[in-house]
Image (cartoon, rainbow, N blue to C red):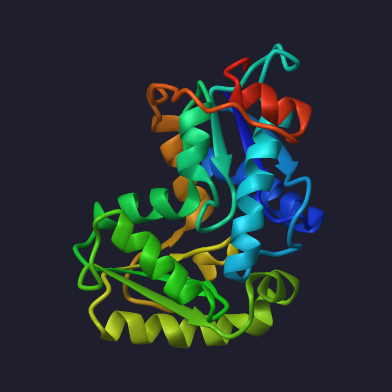
Length: 247
């Protein structure tokens, strides 16, 4: 199976981190060997941390998917992962693409709730808390089942100095457990790879959001039916082709 790993951030160092962690995760998770193809959003924020950046990233994600999936890529993909927590434009991507599209947050919520009735999503940057709370509510989960928590450093800060942030993350995770969380999810591209270290400090399971996305991508069945789109103007040529159903 060939899987596209599209980083919605524009920092190539984050893409490299995601790619390396994903390759290591496949055998550790007992998943079949996959051809993982990393890609970086073509424009937008270096690391998404605000609503404006999320809005721009939605366009960038669709442009990135159009760039890598289509007749110009004859080998094809079996699934795509939007490899940033909160997965900008995931619903739109599912309207347009002929393959399953998986998001890190959605996958994490699904797998965590299989293990416990109350879970916590823990990420970097306070601005993400209300955005993720809205994300969770739209998917039918109330605050009684999914807590959203953050630490002050943003995900890119954590990626640069993970050991320095681990103490803050552990303290916030302990508070989540004290509030009833039976599973803690570490969410965000900048936090990939920290779950084993945090798990050693907590009495509950800790899930890595990239691990969860890989599991769900390998589980994925058929894509949703594609949705016809109104005529568009001014788009990049490959995104226009995707919107017109030519991919």
